[in-house]
Length: 355
Image (cartoon, rainbow, N blue to C red; front, side, top):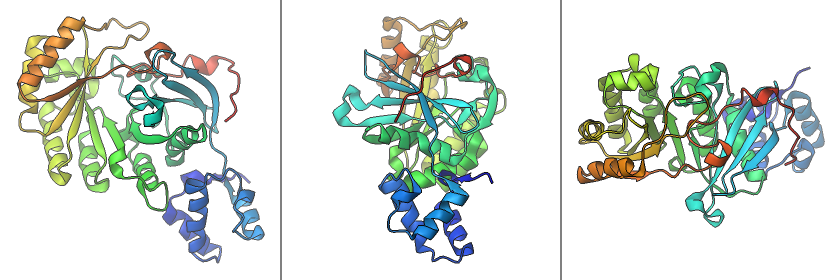
């Protein structure tokens, strides 16, 4: 009999299963405590559960996490990239980033939500893979747990790895509930950031379903035409529709919205682009992360000069916009924004790394 993964079970699901087995609902709370607070790796480790119950759990559920099969560390900034193999053999990448470049400040984990991606943004290596499949909720949360088992003090999670999080809405929402639910990891939702290329209906849903979760929008263009050239989904969701949804998101919980803006030489890095961006953001409580383009193979996109980046920053700052030039952590191991992909690695034989 094929066993389900316990990591894909919500607290409510597991409570229902316990009742179906004729067991008190508090058993589900005990199991979640062992899984998420005490990092149990085996059913037999859960010593306050009756042995017969542990045997039944072992019959029905696997407690195994996905396997780390390769680790790389960028010697420049300490960023670490994990190649993770899922139970069906598919692979995703996860990036562990020292906060402020200092391990003692803890780590941010950049997790993947899909194997591949359907949206084919032109700067993104993942988009070239196409969509292979969605990750289940447990596979998303497992990336955080694996980082913790490597001894990393995880302070923040960003859903910015492979895939479009809001295109896998149900599983991403369930993962957020496990990360922030009191029976799961119990984190403040403000430790979680969800990125999106701009799926308007799901932005409205997230505003209602995940109060406190931060939103980061991949903008990259200041006109519909320019944005469509970079991110084809903009042909479906215009800037007018997108910003209407973002204003709703902000009003719902007064949360500041982050914008990711990839600076591409000669494409979207001009003075007119900066001024149009100012107009788009006027009246919105927000922060802009400027990201000089990270080169991927067979791409014509390059990064602008430092002088051009500085000019863009100054225009936004003079207009009253909070702006940061994001340091591209993990560039030396292809772990920076737009560089994650597993297509070529899936055909390689990679030595296993034990956790």
